[in-house]
Amino acid sequence: TKMIQNSVTSKLPLQGPRISLTAVESSDIPFLREFFQDMSSLLYYIPTTARPLNEQQIESLLMDWNDGKENFVFAVRIQGRLIGLVNLDGLDWVNSHVEAGIALTDPDVRGQGLASETLSLLIQYCFEELGLHRIWARIIDRNIPSIRLFQSLGFREEGRMRQHVLRNGEYRDMLIMGLLNQPQDGC
Image (cartoon, rainbow, N blue to C red):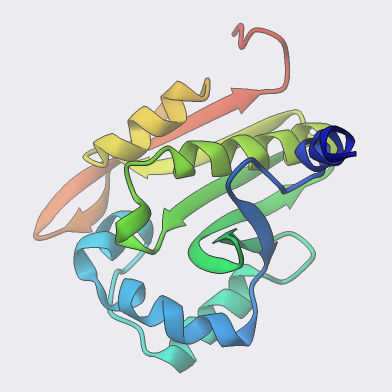
């Protein structure tokens, strides 16, 4: 029975060996406050103007990012405990693509392969459940851990928006990375 249960659980959408992707709840907002006050993280996570946010601003931002039509935010959890956020933005059914983003908001869980597990689940959900053709991401050029993470999952650099984001008085490039739903990402 346990073998059958593990087999079923491993195939459930949004459920991995260690993490699950669930709805973001209002009770999660206080646990996100520290992350959204940490400018060193926000400088790489927010592709627009980075600034510390209070709980009302976080809730408003997440409502905007989670309209349930084209934009979805999932809570990343380990045994029910919130450790991060992953999002799908600008879902385009006609052209069959979406932008993905991730943040492990709990610094204690970084470096343990959880971001890779999370994105793998999200990719599987996008390709197998939603039937999408392409997933893409924007990554600020000096965010080496994110670049390596996306590359390790098969994303390729597709373009570069030169001097697109101002950070600490310096303009930085924004990389566009993409992954196609095909056996080998050919083009």
